[in-house]
Amino acid sequence: MIIIGSDHGGLTLKTALNSYLQRRGYEVSDAGTNSDSSVDYPDFGQKVAETVIKGGAELGILICGTGIGMSITANKIPGVRAALVTDVFMARMAKEHNNANILVLGGRVLDEQKACDLVGAWLDAEFEGGRHQSRLDKISALEKKYCQ
Image: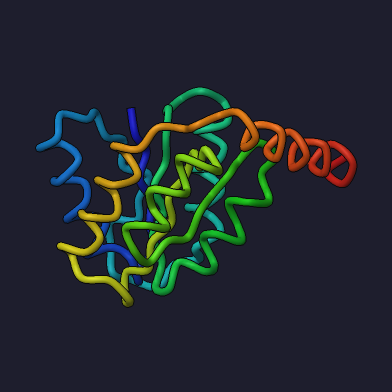
């Protein structure tokens, strides 16, 4: 299962990605928002990040106007590796090298086709492990040190 959430700035893109993911055969949980009324992105970023970390979804996708706020929010949750991406190479590397469990996109920065391309590249990529795992272990050690 993939959980997807957005603020008002990402609503249109979230709706399109929800359909795209379902066409690809994924079960999708929509964490909101479902309105174009102004909302606070940290509320939705937290909900998606906590769901992924607690095992309620394998992966998450977050969308706000630029993706910056959602990325900052999600990465405050220990265990989250949220990657803000703007091109296919970044999306692929987010999974292959960083094992990103949440993909973050900018709803006011990307068109629907580009966003679908990014999500597809991320989903189709596989974590390479090896030297990359030791780097993730160092990130986990930082979380343990500073997130008490």
